[in-house]
Amino acid sequence: MRTRLLTLLAAAGMVAAFAVPAVADDGSQTGTFEVTITNLAATQPISPPVVVSHDYGTHFFQRGAAASPGIVAIAEDGDPSVAVGALSGAPFVTDVVNVGQPLTLAGTTFGDFTDSVTIQIEAQRDDVISVAGMLICTNDGFAGGDSLALPRSGRPATYYLNAYDAGSEYNTEMSEDIVDACSLLGPVVLDGDDNGNNNAGIDTFRRILPHRGIAGTGDLLLAHNWDGPVVMVTISRVG
Image (cartoon, rainbow, N blue to C red; front, side, top):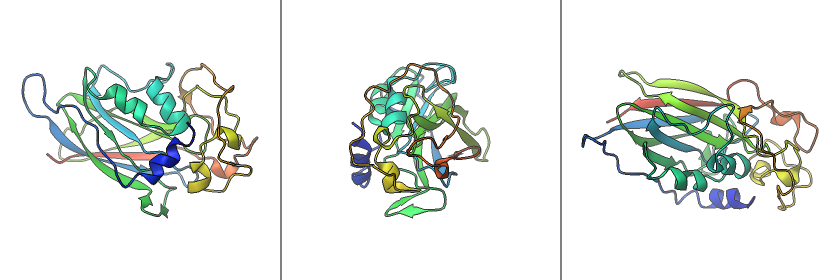
């Protein structure tokens, strides 16, 4: 449901991390990494991201491929539960973390929410990290990075993530097709947003591609548009 993200916002103070056992096949312990996710966009809040450590040969999402149900749920509804459920305990996945709180517009706070959050995740020696969170003021846009390399020295690794279109909804840019948290977190209140969001009838079956941005042809305004990377991710080894 489109109201699921509002439930997540209300419950964000009771966040749980979802993980599979952090032990490599040979019995050796994995490393612990700190992942900081920062919203760079002053025009788009980000839904609670999902962070996963996994084998290099697997992917959370891929440009040009169809979106998985987990990515669709994130990109359309800001719902991390489908991805977390599918990834937890899956082969070649070491750890999965539901960040549990949204990222506010760059440089802003909203109650206890901020534009940056730091979590810890376990990873094996040859793992990579993937991240995805909804661009809340879009139909099915998300900020994502797939297969980000772990730092191999004492220095943190920093990545700048771009915006993608999951290809699962038409970009109507109409308030009734966009999660209510867009009005709640800004940058502006949407006209006609009456808590009746419903994406029935606008489903598409396209591939994941870079997002073209906001056209301003519906209820969304050019004030919701962005330029360049939308999220910065910094990964540091801490254990």
